[in-house]
View 1 (spheres, rainbow, N blue to C red):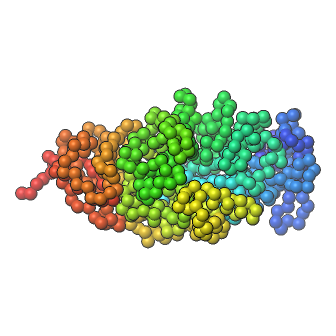
View 2: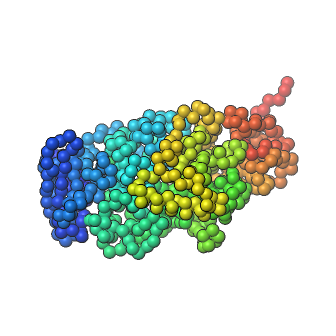
View 3: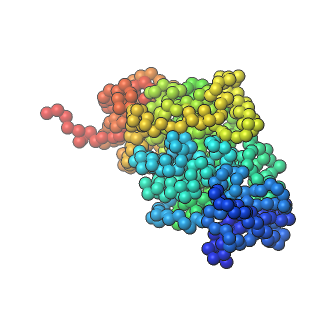
Length: 632
């Protein structure tokens, strides 16, 4: 018999049919039920799986099974049938039968693709269900070349593991190996990745390894060891990675890592809420996941990202220095500072931020603002020192799925602030040494909001709605609000959140802003460096600051951001404003360009003074004054 690739699930063996293996230590018998496909007028076939030793595994090879066969398990003769915990596809949702999938049937054409590096990335967070009106892999595939030509280098997909209902964010997945059936088939997902690689785009998948959804989770019927009672989580019981019986649970999740990297050629994973992946083992499961992903990819590079609310920088340190080995972490500090600067609101988790010039300078120089200091909102210290991390390790954003939805109406950032300030902060993010991430539609100021939506049983939906209102109540400006935007988590919110991609043309001034900045970031020899300690900054006023990016032999760049009123610097006692010894500063880019909807930018003679318009960002490069020819 052909050797199994993975320790669990169904695998087509060709000569022997299909091999099935499942871990069910709390059971004495497991039957495999092969069900007729729709339209087939045949009876179900029933087979006993053999128990292997005392380790809780049951297995068997079934010659009458094949690619496309539908099947479920019967445990101890009970009436209720269960899908395969490692099902590769759930064509009728999490409560339906699993389907045998032969991964070797898909023809990949990305043999020359070598993966993506930690440096030089521009991420694009995408929710397949709302990125297009159709909400499918096939529809999203048609937009890949446009994303690549626009300047995106890698797509970060929101979770796609099978979850209940006709729509949702994906963070309540229950079949971790099965891509959500309403988006399309497994081959549709693979085709999306294959076409992305053809366009030069990497694809990273957001995976949820800290909890399971409240509906459709059959794992406890196979074993009581999947979930832990030792820790508390905001989303129900966390996963048991270190308690009794945790060995096969760790194997289950490590297999899932291998599966996505191997069978789907994914370029990396984004681990959701790593602060809730609890593990007191000598070697963390996160470290093992990162190593597993890299070993599975072989010579291909993989890009591993973490979300960590507590800003534990060790997540992105190398294992040799006691780290977990991730390539990058989401930087909430940057988002929170930017939101305070753009809206002026300092409430809830924005309380400890000023949106000040010094905060932005510190963010771009050192990554996180909180690296162990007291954080009054949580009444405890937050973070650990992150000075050793490369700039690329910090993922910067002013929008993501969570933060847009955590507002009164789910509106995009541009509609919450002054357009000039929006353009200036956008420039700051896209020219920063860190790794920028754009949330779908942000690049053209989508008029559609992004709301929280979920399709669960009525009793669970009401609990989720109440929980959502309780969470938003931490914002005094939202407390007690009964707005439809906050209480409707159903189909209305899902439909309203779909993008109208025609707005790329209708909002061309914003789309052009992003496209030009991404081109500047990629093509400029200094902005593209992402060097550690390759930039310094200074406060020019309460609302203005200068950043100096150090190039080679004086080929530096200046970025001046002014979020206040017009600023005239006719005396400049700041060394970072000093011109290169062989020339002077010349304006190379302005966020107030008419093309971006700005008010225009005057000619600035930096040899005499800097005149910085209000609510703008300006970029300067040096020119050799000896090469400047004056009037005859």
